[in-house]
Amino acid sequence: MTSDDHNGRRDPAGRRKPVDDSRQDPPPRAGSERGRSQPSRESFGRRSVAGRGRDDASWEEPPRRAARRDGLRDDSERLGDPARQQTSRRRTSGRGETRPSTFNADPERTGGTWTPPPAAQWSTGAESGEAGARWAATSPGRSPWGSDDHYAEFDDDYVEPTYEHQYVPAGKVVPHGAREARQKVGSRARSVTGPDGDGPEGVSPQRRRRRLILFGALVAVILIAIAAPWFWYRGQVNGSGGDGEQVAVSIPEGSSVAGIGKILNEAGVTGSPRAWTIYTRLNPPDDIQAGDYTLSKGMSFPDAIDVLVEGPTPLPVTKITIPEGLWLTEIAERVTEAGLDGDAFLGLATDGSVRSQWQPEGVTTLEGLLYPDTYFLGPDNTEADLLQAMIDRFDEQMASIDLTNTAPSAGLTPYEAIVMGSLIEGEAKLPADRANISSVMHNRIEKGMPLQIDATVIYAMGDRVSRVLYDDLEIDSPFNTYQNKGLPPSPIAASRVESIDAAVHPAATDYIYYMVISSDGAHGFASDEAGRQALFREAEANGVR
Image 1 (cartoon, rainbow, N blue to C red):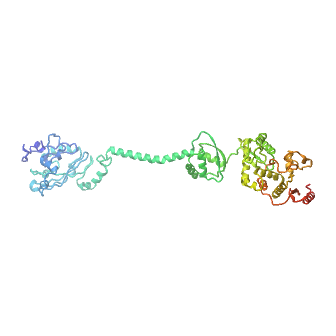
Image 2 (image 1 turned 60 degrees about the vertical axis):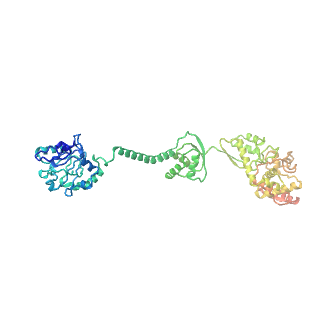
Image 3 (image 1 turned 90 degrees about the vertical axis):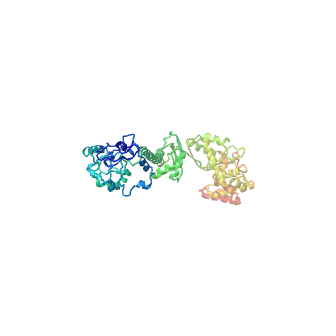
């Protein structure tokens, strides 16, 4: 059933009945669910749009209206008579109020026009239903939106007006002259806030919540990206603490700060070398001293730098200096003076348990095969360590003169060159005399003459005397070169490399005699007995005989 059927305007066949002018308009309906009043059709010939706001569930949409809504009516029928203009549209919203603007109908067919009532005669929202009821009670037969002059009757060719939409928040009244201003700002206002005024129109709470979650996740990722490197850097600077294990670290001379960071990291003392570089650039350390350190694993950067700036802690070190020309027994005495066991050292050097590469088969002693130098021993070093260090040092020096190849060119084996070098070491007082003394030895061996070297007699005696007497020349020993021709069976002292080199590179002379002729130890040389007698007289004149 349609609203016209309720008002008695249509017959059972659906045709519109004549209007009864004597009939009084019913009071307007109360505000609909959209918050606007519904004046009756008889007040000014208007029906509610598509039945909205009707309480009658049996209302049916007229066929012509449905066709117009579906776009099936042809243009001429949809547009109607050109004289009949539809210029106004009315819409409502859930919380606001709209008012109709001017509606013009054909005066000849309708008998007049109607305009909106003054601003004081219309209200908003939920008040509209009450306002319509008051108007109907006080003004029977008149439209609640205007006077009788504004009322227009419509015939069967009724064209339903449309209404312009103006959103008005609840509780607000739009003055009659502000419609154009509202139209200018309305769309922008609707695009900024929704009907509730609490956010962009069309953005659901779920979408806003999702956006907030995404924004929070983005902020969290940024904070983590910033904080993670910082916490890593601080962890490297502060160190892990470690288990207190001590490690030995050596800082070479001339090392860079970055290089020191790598050395400490490889030893497990500090963390990342990159973090070390950053820290030392931000906090430049004072001069770091090279040397050997004992540090703890897992140290912080500041603690490690403090130790390196303070310098290495002196470790207990034993220093032993072995001069050239010492016998093996004399070297053992120096070892005892340094705090080690000299007897144990001597036993290792003579029992064949420790050997040198220059030692011939059958020779057990290391006499003359230990290089004279200064050695440093740590608290854990033993006599065997010292002995091996002296052997290694001697091997290095012999390699420097290529003894393996130079000795044969002089008619000697490497061991014989070492033995002759020990004799030169015991005889020569000045470096300039070494080559000439070597020449005398080579010449006497070639002539089959005994070497007659006082140093061998003193070694055989086992007592360092300042002068060899005639009685000392009678000692029975293979080392007594007055009684035995050729070289002694082994070296008689620790020799410098210069003396051994002189043994394989003798001077080209015909000397067969030499003698100390001055107090500074210089020697004089002669090729025959007459020259030898001349050397005696010179030595006596200088007071050295």
